[in-house]
Image (tube, rainbow, N blue to C red; front, side, top):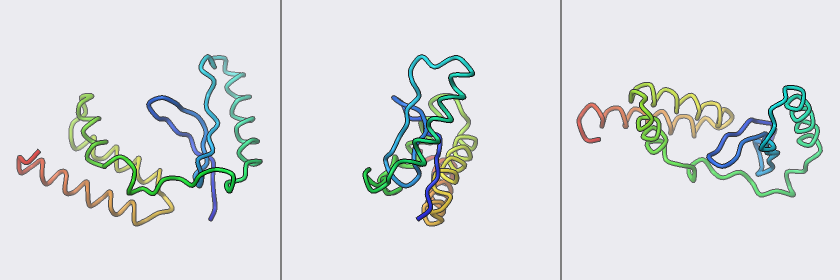
Length: 123
């Protein structure tokens, strides 16, 4: 399976990561200088090329990730309109799982169901 380097942002960490395994190269906490950021990016890409996916745990299955509706609700709680929140999460899912069409289709179905339930007053 092809792998690629991807930027990841989670609640407690952010940085470069592998698309196929749990390899991560987190950003140092006080990295502010543009030249240092550029050096960090170059170093992360070099480390990515050198790492062996077999040495790291595999990525979680998308079905084990946070539920679509939970992700949407977090954005709504931050002040996004429901339709905008759904669109943003769908775009995130399309980027996160661009090589997994079943996961993208599942997210689209969940988006439609979420909006339908919202219109009918169930949520």
